[in-house]
Length: 226
Image (cartoon, rainbow, N blue to C red; front, side, top):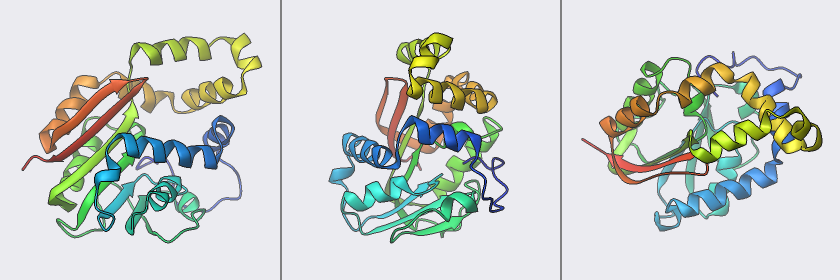
């Protein structure tokens, strides 16, 4: 959830983007996707008592994934009170702006973002502020795990297919994806158009341990650069 995407006012109405996402994959599918992704990024090697916070946690499916992986101390942050209220689990969640985190310096061992940074409105300014805050709260030997969309050849192909009206008619999943892209086009395309700035900002604050660009995703694991 972006810093300006939700006012935090509760609403009984389902957001159009959220409705499309629920057509794209079920909460259970999302949790299992997150479990597999975190394992691939080396989460299984992290201490189970690591102090973890997930930013842009939304309704908390990433937190459910951390629970399934056996972690004991994890928290979530999202700007949307409406989404955070949907979480049912042991983690403490904060309705807060990612550019000003409610944590003490060096108080977290791991900070995770899965598909939230590309919702930021102002790039690179918002990204710089978010990275600076993450670096502030991260322990000296801490880790960051970022997964965000990236304009690889595969993603270009997916975009082309999803824009085909006939394909959208017969594939609910691709129609849901195309709808989500349409609803967040400004921030989504702004993010995809700035790979050099994004990579430079990440490396300014974090030294990469692993970085890859595959299947339309940027996967980044790093440690504080200071």
